[in-house]
Length: 233
Image (cartoon, rainbow, N blue to C red; front, side, top):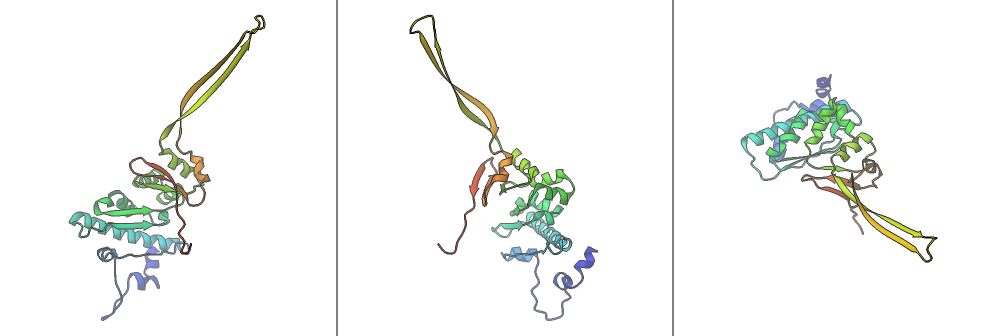
C-alpha cells in the first residue's frame, strides 16, 4: 500500500518523474544538495497524512545516511559541516536516522531532533530501550516546559546530585529558682549538609514560556531563556 501511495499522482510526478527529452526540470538529491552547500526545507504534511509523510521522511533519511557513509568512506571534500534538523522526529525515525546520530559525526554531520515526549520515541520504535538508545546518542539535551511525567523523569535522572547546606540555630536559657540571680543562656549554630536534586523533575512542568533546562556535553547543566527577536524596538 505504501508503494502504491508513493507512485500514484501527485507523488509520482514528484518522486518518480518520467522525464521527456529536453526537459528543464530541476532534479536533485541529498548528495547534490550537500555538495552544492544548499539549504533545503522539506514539509512532509504529516498532520494531513501521517503514513505518507512518515514514509517520505524515512526515505530521505535513508538517502542522507547513504551520503554520510560515502563521505566517511571516501573523505569529505568540503570543510562545511552538514546540519540536519528534524522536527517531530518520532514521525520519521528509522534505523538510518539512528545510524546518522550514532556515527554521523565521522562524516561531519550534526543532527538535531525535536519531539514532544519520551513516549513518542517508544511508541514509534515499539520499545522503551530503543527510545533510550536514540536519546543516548544525543550529546546535548534542551528541554522547554514538559508536562509528561515520564519525560520529566528521564531528563532529571541525568542531572547530578548536589550538596545543600543549611544552618540550624538553637537557643536556650535556664533560671535557677533556688539561687537568686542565677541565670544561664546558650546559643548554638550547626551546619547541616545533605544531597538534593539539582533540578527536581516536577519543576520541568513549571518552566515559564521560552525558559529551558539544558544538559550539555561535558557534564554542564544550564538554566536559560530564549530571547524574543523583534523587527522593531
